[in-house]
Length: 96
Picture 1 (tube, one colour):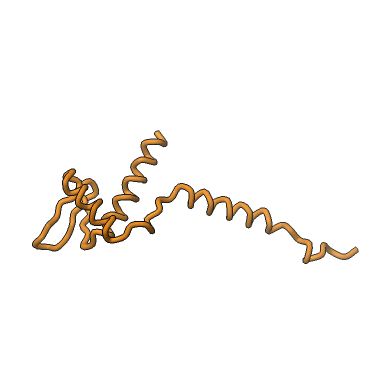
Picture 2 (cartoon, rainbow, N blue to C red):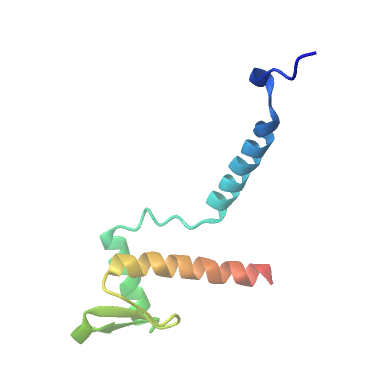
């Protein structure tokens, strides 16, 4: 009797299905940063400066995110970082 027909082998289907579910889970828990345009970033950074979360350092032309100590030379980079940092911190709190 011949072996299984390779055209009907579904052994990899389950593994592919699991990979797709894991990717969906990661997408569902990730923070969407694609909507951070320059104007949105500037407003967020201005709010963070007012709240003493970000310190501008004019002589170095950087913005320092005080809770993490990370410096950025772009308001957009800082806004994206802060969103991710906040989401990560919130996830840690929910997991406790």
